[in-house]
Image 1 (spheres, rainbow, N blue to C red):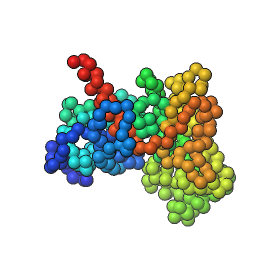
Image 2: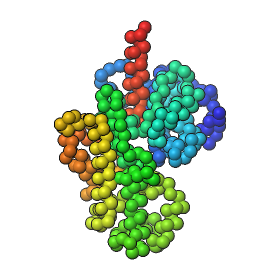
Image 3: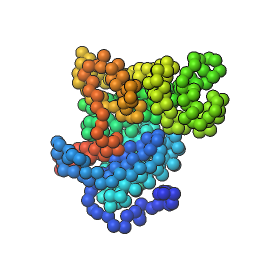
Image 4: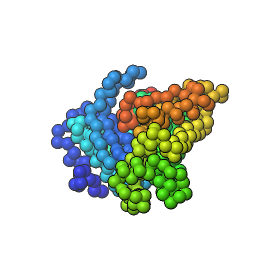
Length: 353
């Protein structure tokens, strides 16, 4: 099978001319917008992780969601970003002990099996391989590798994903814009674009969104918006309009405010669905659980703080929810997951001997 790196055929057998033999792990966070790979050394087993974490290298590539770009392109992106991270760290694949690949679009065991199959083609048999949805890495970035609690991601897309301490898991949303990922960056911007068209043809109220969006896109009329949208309806391109919606809401536009309020309710519903299914809140609804919040939509703005409003909704029903803004990125969370799983298996193998 041909593999590509920087547009050229690349063979893993000729990766890095000079590499150290120190054992490393790879953590990958692959989303609809970008893919990040972190290379970290194997650290001695300890309850306390070093601060700062010893990241050897970080590599960045484009979209690796096979639902967005196709399986071949997604695979090439993932292989490229792993090779870049290993090269930057002065390592090669023989030094790799574990890989956690957390990518959006992994929604079923068949997705995991397919990715594991081609990963096994790349790495030696002794390398531990773990394939997860990217939401799992985002959770781990807030809990420093521990799979417990719930994560809410709201960026280009959105998903809520949770784990109990005994390993049960559940998710809500994350099915893409066609299947109703409302509350996501795409969902917010798509409703704003729809509001502009509705206002233009008389089906909806006048809104500041019309002039602001047209000015942002360099268009002269709402009619031109149709051509702009369908020329490239990619999720990230649409979602990039979220700051415009927020600015209009902060300026008092009722339509923009309504869109953001509906987004808050949808995001809170996703979290509540996961919490209820897993019983994270306990029988009385007051148990503590970490709620990791990740993504550009949840970042604070001048006056419209979507993340804060989501927490206000959730804490009314679940006062034990503890909001966590991760100090490390999801790719580091994936690396910590790989490290934790690797160490667990090492301990189990030692007991069996």
